[in-house]
Length: 126
Image 1: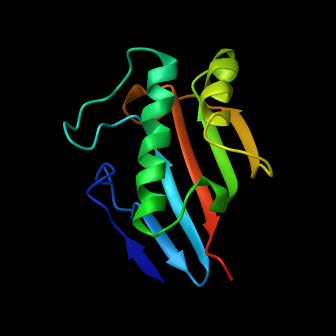
Image 2: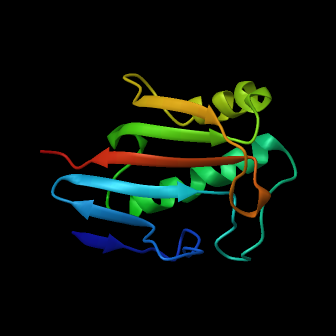
């Protein structure tokens, strides 16, 4: 198991790695809308918040030579299912078919009071 860390994504806010590589699989921890440069949350709109989350995920993928086409599974956590439409639209704009497997759930609370957190599993080419 190898811990992954890139300065292009926010530093972990707890005892976890941004991502872990095990074999040919990359497990990316849940990302929230923290700007890696300023450390500030991006919450001007749910669309902006979701784009920041996706850019954080993209930075971790790219640090390992991967892109969204390598993602095989995503998990989306929302503060309310009322946000599903706009989050889904932004999320979908980062992918082309075949899409990864995914679940989306609403939870009671997310770190730092954010509205969306997304984690991913990606596979390295064989």
